[in-house]
View 1 (spheres, rainbow, N blue to C red):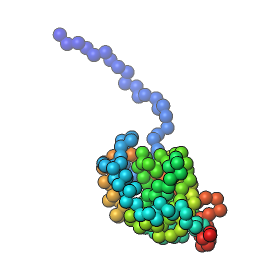
View 2 (view 1 turned 60 degrees about the vertical axis):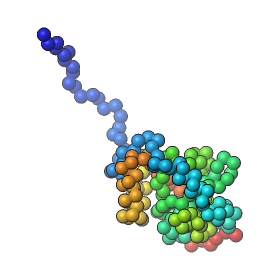
View 3 (view 1 turned 180 degrees about the vertical axis):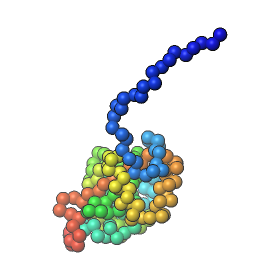
View 4 (view 1 turned 180 degrees about the horizontal axis):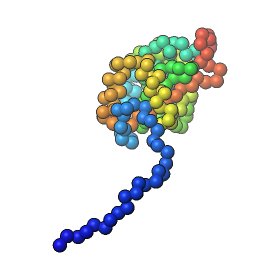
Length: 197
């Protein structure tokens, strides 16, 4: 003897919230908290091997111009630990309207440090993080999901195919990524202004 299933209502559920914001990257399906494989050990090795000038950059004279950063393929981001120790990290950054945009892991050290202290220094650098010019005082914030597509377009237009391959790999691994918006400190970032002494 077969049991009959109770009939359920086939009415569609009422919409409870607004549609989810568009993803910045079509291929991104992040798992919250997921990092790149071996991200933490690699970050520690990179911190030990960072060029000494990257740590001493806080002592350098500042610039008021984003021009050098805008023209450099890599940007050195210097964030601060609780005790004030500077931590340099090279990254891809793209500039538009006097602000820089960076994509990074949501659970990375720099994002955690920025949550405590939004101040940072930015400077042009080599792939390994050796500074190539004077730093610029700035503040940074993590962009909301609604703001991410614009930041992704700015970065994609700057770096093209090489970055696209890397980011596809990150998306395939379902790494939880976010975007940073870096704003020069008040009175800085105007094109062509001279370096401060």
